[in-house]
Length: 187
Ligand SMILES: *[C@@H]1O[C@H](CO)[C@@H](O)[C@H](O)[C@H]1NC(C)=O
Ligand SMILES: *[C@@H]1O[C@H](CO)[C@@H](O)[C@H](O)[C@H]1NC(C)=O
Ligand SMILES: *[C@@H]1O[C@H](CO)[C@@H](O)[C@H](O)[C@H]1NC(C)=O
Ligand SMILES: *[C@@H]1O[C@H](CO)[C@@H](O)[C@H](O)[C@H]1NC(C)=O
Image 1 (cartoon, helix red, strand yellow):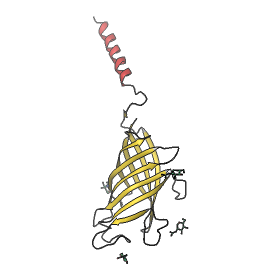
Image 2 (tube, protein in one colour):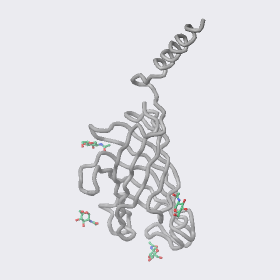
Image 3 (tube, rainbow, N blue to C red):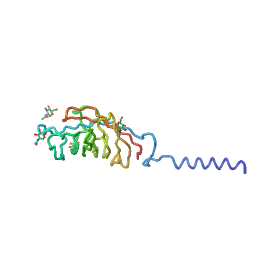
Image 4 (tube, helix red, strand yellow):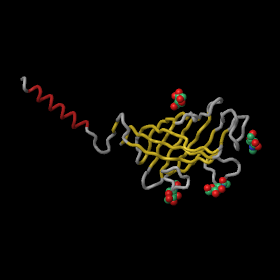
């Protein structure tokens, strides 16, 4: 009896080990990222003069503003719809791997802060499918973390976070975001 017990414990241990081992196509949950990716996206805001190059447009403005120029009071009440090219480096003219499509709205009167809801829609041989993001974007912070809700294609059922950084900001017309994506659930 005394020798049987350690053997059965050992057997149980191996049984548990074999059933919990990740199989291909099976969901993996980890406290460390299972995948990391970095992308840049470029936003050229329509300002009444750059219709040809603009990738975004103000679609909503408060009573004290208009849809050509961002409103005062930290742009509070402005809503922008965008379709920005995604590149693998910080060069606007690099071949895009997809588009960032969605909206942002400014939601605080005394400080620049926005709320983001958008998707990365990929169109390249390297990445296929889409990933969806949502979250608060306190623009004055050097880095901001938003949630990656899920995706399709290569990113089917993936979840994680995106750390956003303003990589360039040129007046009210151009900005570039760097998005470092860390997936914590991969399939
Ligand atoms: C559009 O972009 C091109 C290339 O970057 C630039 O030469 C041109 O001045 C831009 N046009 C407008 C209207 O912003
Ligand atoms: C929009 O607002 C700006 C700033 O107040 C003003 O200069 C501009 O003329 C306005 N444009 C339109 C089309 O109303
Ligand atoms: C996807 O990329 C191809 C090749 O670069 C291009 O012809 C096509 O228009 C792109 N499709 C979309 C939806 O951007
Ligand atoms: C933004 O920065 C402030 C000050 O450093 C910090 O307290 C706050 O938690 C940050 N917000 C986010 C969403 O990261």
